[in-house]
Image (cartoon, rainbow, N blue to C red; front, side):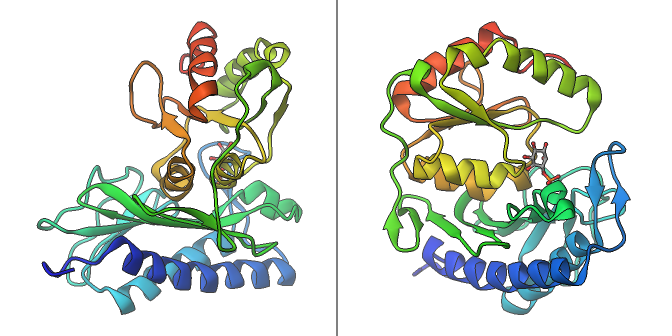
Length: 292
Ligand code: LIP
């Protein structure tokens, strides 16, 4: 760009290169056997040696290509969810994602989930992904989600559309919630899960069916493809949402929270415009953003 800022396309090219290498590492490490399984927020929330190795690889690759950028990663820092600083800066404390990248106008921050779908990874289910997005001035402008097991890849740039294998994605054309296949997911906290189960029990007879695949970034991409009609989940973190959220939005889906709030930890709904409102209103009635 004339002002020296990278274009979304330039950032996407970097994201795709880095994500492909990272996905190859995840796939290779899975073939060698899952190692060093530790728990995080609860006894069922796991992190493996591969999550950490893949995240380190992504940070190192980005540092080589763009040393001044920051990287927010799911596993970075002692408690996870921290930010790797730009070259020459102090790290932020892990455990709490920084709200926005520091630095002047045009600052780029990368948001990485090294392995989204870690439980699938643990069990060898071929449904886990590297998710990498680039944010400029706090706005996601480029993103890639790559299923490391199948090598399927979804990309998007802000204003430039969403693609898989060269095909532009447009989401589902379904207009009736009762005929909609709806994907969702559950948090790791058992009390939250119980609430999410109650919500689901009162939604399942209002829709065609429910799917729970276990990787939020891929759920968003499947919604972008129209392989499910819609998706919602409470508790997503920036690394779950950044790249897949852009893919879904650029495929024409509405991606938002409840009652005009932006998509975020309270709730993410991704749905074609015709389904968004009925699903949203149903989720409001079911208190989907409530509970713990
Ligand atoms: C997981 C997801 C899953 C969601 C979980 C969790 P992880 O990410 O993508 O679909 O329901 O709450 O966030 O732990 O595999 O990176």
